[in-house]
Image (cartoon, rainbow, N blue to C red):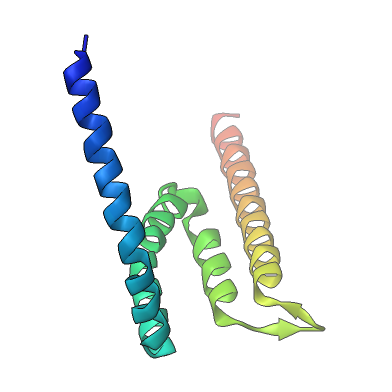
Length: 122
């Protein structure tokens, strides 16, 4: 159990840290305001690379969904607009259509395989 002395020390150090961060916030705001917009966009893009990589890894983890996930990603990233509807909608539509087509092909292939097995046995 922490002692009162340790708790007081933590409170003082937290207070000092908040004071320093609060005083430096004005400087950080001034630096960001003075920097060119392209620099801010580049830093934001770099910050999102890890999230993008993790999302792509999760979306392509299951082999049976990998192609549909990539179709969705590519169309969404393309930025196309059709009939006033933007790319994220069309990416979802294309990905779902691709997944349905894949499942239909797999189902047809499995049924054909079962029928040939029955013919050989029968």
